[in-house]
Length: 210
Length: 210
Image 1: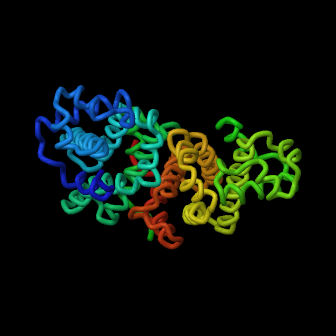
Image 2 (image 1 turned 135 degrees about the horizontal axis):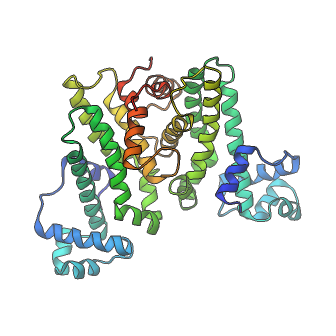
Image 3 (image 1 turned 180 degrees about the vertical axis):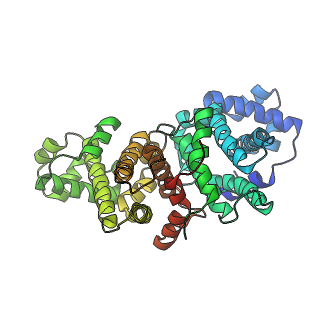
């Protein structure tokens, strides 16, 4: 199984080349994980579900840990691609941030694997979302900070803020809302947009002393 | 064992009257929890450690769950009292928020029970810090929102922001930093103050559209 650091690196640099059989294995694994949870899924389940031989599966994913990592990395890449798509047509950084915040909350809410893992395998899932969440938060921060830095270079975002720090505030807040949705911050699309405009854009604009 | 809602209520309204024997039991339980973790602590350990009879302990705390709740509530009340003390001498809301942020991070870092629970009993601790963290976040939000509301009433804070929402942003961010400290946000006293001035005060001042 990959270490957290390797996982982070693959997430940032893109994964192995897309290969139809690999995709078919990951599709089967994802369906099994969503239904039974990773712990109760066997390599045989994945072979049966994918219609491929056990040897084919083991050649690409030697352990179940590799399969779990493979599925999570593909889901993460899909998430970032979906996010990029959702904001591509918007013309200002501020509009993209507002929409990106609302879309992230929506995708997380609709992510079946995520909801399933929280309920079925908290002992596997919760440490990686909390005391071991450093690499996950760093990957998301890297994605967002890159976009902020580009906007600053183009003169489309205030230069007085540190992109890494602003990105980390937004990532931590979103992460908290995904893990613990209850509270006074609205999570539906329109509510999330209004909230982001009113309370998050001031952070990006900076303006505090010091 | 108290429900999350009852726990929240006691936290906000203050606990049972302070009673020397109760405090002595809770001191003994806290020491045992810090050393062995709650799961491996028995009522007999607490009796021995406190020098009181088992009957005295059971009369005040019928189950170990009640003892865990009692210890956590007292720690939470101590935390809020320490926080109030640390900011009492400061004259503006903004200075109190900046100092309160730095002090909260410091107290959490130095909280032995907290660090111990994260490491020794993650399966007990992590759900209450994530998917079941609603009541905990609500208690902290209630504390902070009350202070923001008072400042608004006195004209000492901008009126255009919702105290509950601003408080929730700050609470969620701090909670995330306690659970997962690694990142680009500085956590030492001076770094935390500079960060709070530059990136958190703009949220309190509002100014976003919508």
